[in-house]
Length: 301
Image (cartoon, rainbow, N blue to C red; front, side):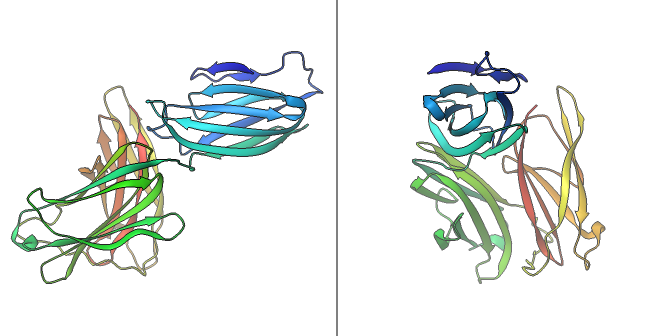
């Protein structure tokens, strides 16, 4: 089996140089969900007659010229420690038309640990407060549900060990000592093999003098929009959100937009600037309607 290494350049790989145009075809392969955890992907391709090739990919796009026929592709995603974090298999056909194939990094193997910490203001409204934590799986079932977390000497935290690798939804709801709902946070996170994943939830928006209690309206329609890079230089990146779909009973100027980076609030409103890369969470809410949802993405400067 031949071994090729694809550097992060726009390169088309010809696996059989002796083919003419009538015998060959092109396929464009894109890898979705390629985030900061992925170092590279090993791509192995098998065809009829014992054909096999292998290539290491370091970016999200790969274009190949292959002989016409049926093929099977196996993709193994690795992290920087050479640990396997995902595998994927697909079949495709090379014919007269140019083909496109999307492969998602979503089949994770092994198990890891999850550490969740909560930042809760030390103000009177939070005396005796507690968090209700739920962790859901992609299949609709729960890893755990409605676990009550109270304050300890280390603050508010929860640790789970040996969780099967995969994507999970983590929901945290904050209540006061009487059991009245105060606020809610939600995020999605991947658990990887032999790795500790740390999450940070911040419940610090209310302030000590005039706390605002958010009421979640679970019947409200989510808001849809796009996030764009409106300015970029070597030191700073400016992001802007454009709202495209708003529930009929909601006014755009009543929507509060919050930007978080690595769990810390970095700005409010439709635009925000950051001088470092990494994970960014955007949440939208209002005093009357509560939370409209959130979005997570990654930036690199």
